[in-house]
Length: 233
Image (cartoon, rainbow, N blue to C red; front, side, top):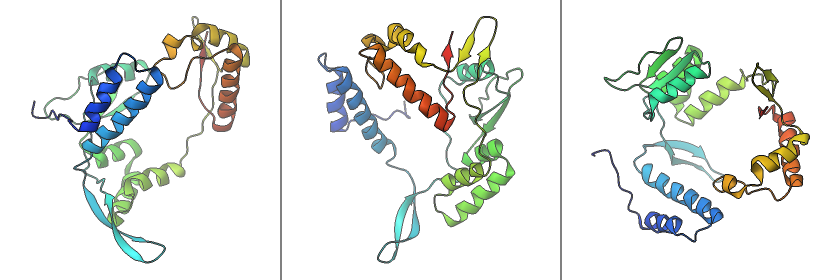
């Protein structure tokens, strides 16, 4: 149990007590879970490495601290890796990058190329190629948001062309875009049931009209951002 860390911060313990109370409602439960996650994040990131970075303030040039995410940055282990690889195969992917596990490589899957990466640098090179890796190293040399800059610059010039929600049809299944005519079925089927929505980020719909407004908003987002969103028949 050497890798187990007990977070006994008083605020975390206090908020865990709140969510365990029988009278805690769904809204308060979700809000408190979010607060607990933030507090845990503070504890989990306590030992992150920092680097000195020169910046220009409105008054003068100065040195500040910035999180150091390096080429040799750790890739965290994936829980239930075998199960997730099976899901990757089922979805039709041909290549998958996973964190390197010393002495315990994942079992081969037919038709799936599994690439094990020991650190961030290896993962970037495997996923994006040599060109992106070189850009990664260039940004690293000046130590200024280099990981984020690598991804933004590389993909900015190679933005994928989204095709939006297309109709996908098989003998037993039809996937299509949502339509306003689906509002009644959406309301009756799931959106009006508080037991279905109690742990979601939105509350149960009060009427089919509310469902229709949600679908209309989703359609606007789909048209503006090529959002992939499927209804199933």
